[in-house]
Image 1 (cartoon, rainbow, N blue to C red):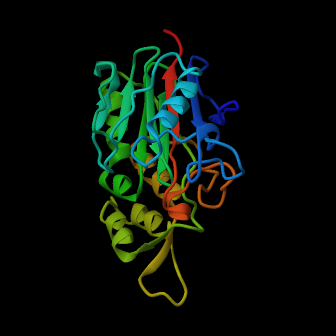
Image 2: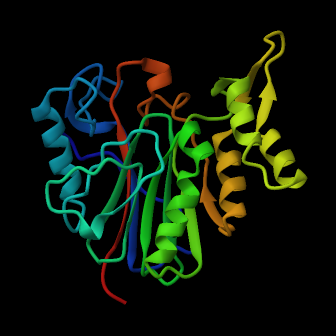
Length: 264
């Protein structure tokens, strides 16, 4: 197994005492269809996708070597529950789609393979968070719930980073998705912004291409988060870097992680 594939979050203004990264599919132990797509092993981190447990364990061990302690892996269900991982017992797997922490060393972690991973911290570097935001989670308020949980933990000005997700040229959805977001609008201006994240597909009535990044930015701004970075990649189009469920069906999962390195 070669060195694991990962990249620090390209996040201007990230406090110096906060670490953040997103893994990629290369450099792991997993064979096809969880491989790197280029003849090598894949860094699949999901235990629920059919990969052999010992492959996933090897991949997670390689990742943990980069971190201050073991990540808290969650059972993600496209909901809005936020786990306070400072209070999670070692080995527990909370059923949640977001996590927050204020203890140095605690690693907030979400897995994705087209859904949008969003990392959070406050500008003082005292509280961090991570959210798994597919369209259902976005429409249900997972980002707002994460921001609220951070503020309850004492966060000041919150900033966010959008990781790799299915891009606006690839994410085909039906009218029900558009309507789910329009229902969230707080006034005409927000409704216009949300509607603007959908582009009708010519010749296919009721079908749209949706921009998860634009939807997330709109909802974050409504929640008072205006310092937003990232949102530059498409998991479907970039098979050399990322797993994609929509592209491949049976596939692995990458992770986005954030932690406080040390006390202020």
